[in-house]
Length: 120
Image 1 (tube, helix red, strand yellow):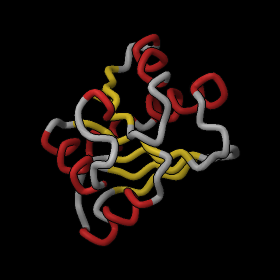
Image 2 (tube, one colour):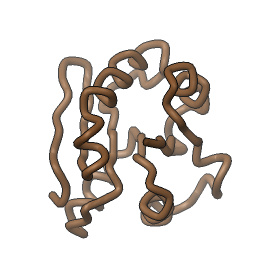
Image 3 (cartoon, one colour):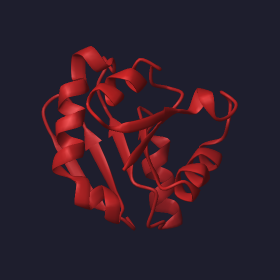
Image 4 (tube, helix red, strand yellow):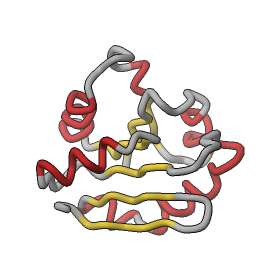
């Protein structure tokens, strides 16, 4: 399982994930900052990555295209820094490993997480 961190999240997520033994890459190391969501989705699909984002458009794109992947983990909190919500994110990812490997959209907010199996 490898995480693709979207541009709208801090590169500080990279060492945080690595400290938790989760392989990750930040989009800023791969492509242009202004890349379209569809480009990021396709890269993630081609490279068997889970998109980690704060952007609501990824869920919409999965729903509109009825795609079965890639999996997306979406944060819906004001503070998206790893020191604030990182342990929750890692816990949800580890608890939902099978769902993420099959294809799912996981939405995490301050109080709960919701899992939807793809296609939506």
